[in-house]
Length: 258
Image (cartoon, rainbow, N blue to C red):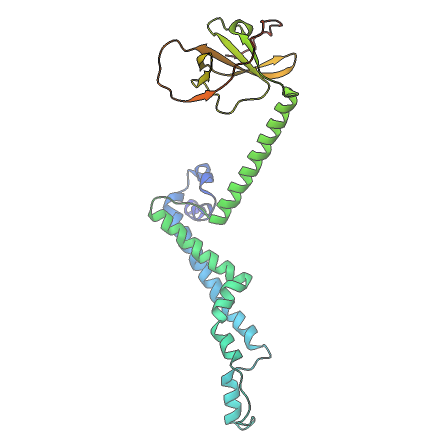
């Protein structure tokens, strides 16, 4: 019983948290949770609407029915002017309450989100409360962006000043099976393992890039192997090779490189 009741409340949470409560029948109780949310919103809206009507009734504006009753009782002349504004206000009261009061908006949201969760379960894609799910996604994205920004700033600090690419023989990076290596001060977008590097001197196949600490700072090393046979172009980038440098000042290989 406690697991079932708990599942009703847990089903409101974003779906990614559900596996943490795998001992509860969350997927089974998800539609019940949505329906109960909608019913709670309906009850809250009804109570709130009648309280709102009492506030409207207590306003200085007099309703047409009250004016008519006073005219019949003789306490108000029949020639008295009657305004239709109070009557119009009473007609739009449900809309005004639902969309222009905090309690009304909250009630409408509970009803809409509750039945939406029931419908999502019906199509085999159950999820938790939409607002909680959205806030959770926003918080995770903010944290991820902050972490990525911190990593990016730390890498820029390790890379130092940006400088032109350098070109060395493969032996510079202790890669005897590689023809050339491009040493870049910044990572190159789209340069991934298996990419064809198209140059005026020929086509090269890009190996797995890796980082190397040099006297100039952290650098990204791109191994290039000359393509000597015809191959189907899957993904290629155009590049102008810089002048070839002598393999001086070799840097020791770091564990896990290449």
